[in-house]
Amino acid sequence: MNQKQLLRMKDGLGFIAALDQSGGSTPKTLKAYGVPDGSFNNDDEMYALIHQMRTRVIKSEAFTHEKILGAILFENTMDRKIDDLYTADYLWDKKQVIPFLKIDKGLADIDKGVQVMKPIPGLDSLLDRAIKKHVFGTKMRSVIKEANPEGIKNIVDQQFEIGLQIAKKGLVPIIEPEVDIFSKDKEKSEDILKVEILKQLNNLPKDIKVMLKLSIPTKPNFYKECIEHPNVLRVVALSGGYERDVANRLLALNDDMIASFSRALLQDLRYQQTNAEFNQSLKDAIDSIYNASVK
Image (cartoon, rainbow, N blue to C red; front, side):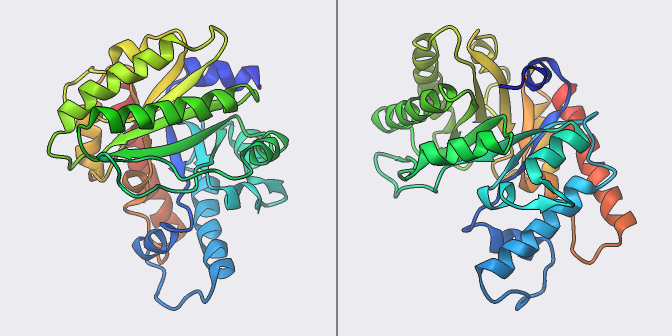
C-alpha cells in the first residue's frame, strides 16, 4: 500500500470523483454528455467514447489534487491509457489523485427489500491486476430499498466479507451500502444500517482500514460514530440521484463527510462544449462540491 496515498486520503482536503460508470450505465452517461444517437455500434466503440470523456475530465486544468483526493475507475478504464500512461498511473503521477477501482458486477434482483451484489467471479485475479496497475483501493455497491432488517444485514455482511478479502490484499475497500433516497422509510433503513455497520467495524482486525460510501443521511451527522471509528479511513457520500445543488446543500450539513459524486459532478458537461466551456463547467462543479465537502 502506498503510504503517501494513505496519509493523503486520511487527512487531505477534497473529495472523490466517481468516474466508474460501467457497461449498464455507460449509454445513459454518454447520452447525458450529449453524444449523438448512433455514435457507436458496439461495446468497443462505446467504451472508446466513454474513455474519451473520462480522459477529457482527468486532463482538464480544472481537475487538480488541490480539490480532488481520488477518482474511482471502471475496469475498462483501468486497462486503458491516457497519453502513454495507464489511467491509474496518470492520475497519481500527473495529477496526484488517488486511483480506486469499481469491482462489483452489478446488482441482484430485489430480495427482502434490498439488492445485494451479484457474484464477482475472478475477484482475486482482478485485485492482483489492480495492484499491478497501482490502484489504491476498490469500490462495490449494494442498494437498500426498504427497511428490512434481514435484507440490510445481508447487504452489510456481504460487503464486509468481500471488503476483508480486499483489505488482506493490501487494498482499501470502499464499502457502499446505498440507501435509495426515494425510499419511503429511508430514515428507518439508516437506523438499521448504522447498527449493522458498527457491528462489522467492531469485529475488524485493528490493522484493517476501510472506507464507507453512504447516502447522505436524513439526520445530519448521523454517521459520526462511523467517521470516528479507528478502522475507518474516510466516510464519503454518494449523490444518489440528487441534483448537485441539493446534494451539496445536504452534504454540507454533515461534518467530516466528503463527496464521492458521479452524476452530480458530470451533469453540466457536454460533448459539444469548447475546451474553455468544458473546463469552466467542470471547475464550477468541482468548486461547489469541494466547498460542500470541506465546509
